[in-house]
Image (cartoon, rainbow, N blue to C red; front, side):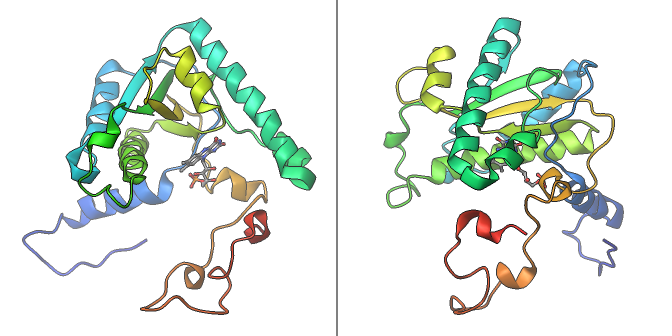
Length: 235
Ligand SMILES: Cc1cc2nc3c(=O)[nH]c(=O)nc-3n(C[C@H](O)[C@H](O)[C@H](O)COP(=O)(O)O)c2cc1C
């Protein structure tokens, strides 16, 4: 993307702007990692970035557990593997194709985090009275911050959501009401995939703009705006 920006006192410099767009364009969900350790100072910066995320009513529902115990990491991997097999069965005719995809790098990544929603979220009604799922949206914002910052630091990250949340919560001794939503694999990579890996594997492709952007009213009869029949949208 090339930028030509009119001057504004509020705008970042052209170089800074380009860096932001570059991080967005080149962030990838990574599943292949090198074993090299992550510099602790870089890790601190990444976690700082995550914690700067916006959140509904400023509730900051995210809780990050850094997994350093090898046996725990192995147990998390087992949970994910079980769910991977269950997902393949649920996918029916695309099950075999799904099993050929690499969907996590839990045992290889230098760092592993589990991100969970904190308990007691029902007390937060600001912005959630009619939309309680805004806690999930807020947690996702924190992960996206971390993801983009990691890319800027040259580190890869992968979000794994193939697990039974209650079993992962039990494994990590979470209290009632806490709910894990992400296993994050983070670390150095040999190179970043040039395109989403699911695109490379012909599992799905990015929807064209007309399928996701419209004006005023919900467009009728336009592909992408009709009922999403799951994988039917994949090409
Ligand atoms: C909420 C969420 C959950 C995801 N869960 C998984 C997962 O369990 N396994 C996996 O391989 N990728 C997972 N991904 C990554 C997506 O497959 C990936 O973002 C998508 O294919 C687009 O690729 P990109 O992130 O490289 O642009 C997840 C992404 C999100 C946002």
